[in-house]
Length: 140
Image 1: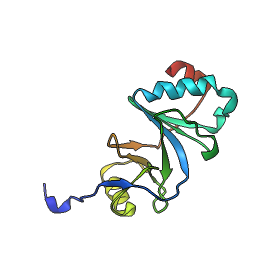
Image 2: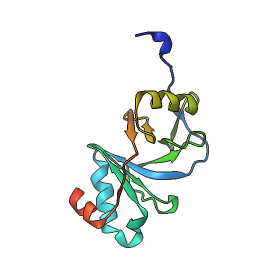
Image 3: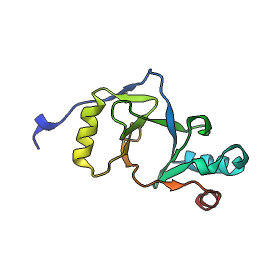
């Protein structure tokens, strides 16, 4: 491998004001979030939410004002320069997100992705599902 083609970058604290578009739960926080949503359905219009789920995470996408909070969840935002790139609200790359998005697009075939800091992941967002009571009951 040619080391000249590698781009060195790191995550840094994001101190800018952001608008979250999704709540992200990892590992043991996933069932806590799902149980909370199931128990508090009267507070949330589930029809306004979609989700992306993997083996150890769930991303619930919805209106900022209705995103739930449970101890341990984090939030994701759409990058202001590259809308197809989503990032954690609490961290940002040390390099241009345009450069980073181009590198991701060259490696992955997905148009929209969430780039996460810990654990380090690139999560495709192309397929999301409606959040329903039935899914919450099943997934718990």
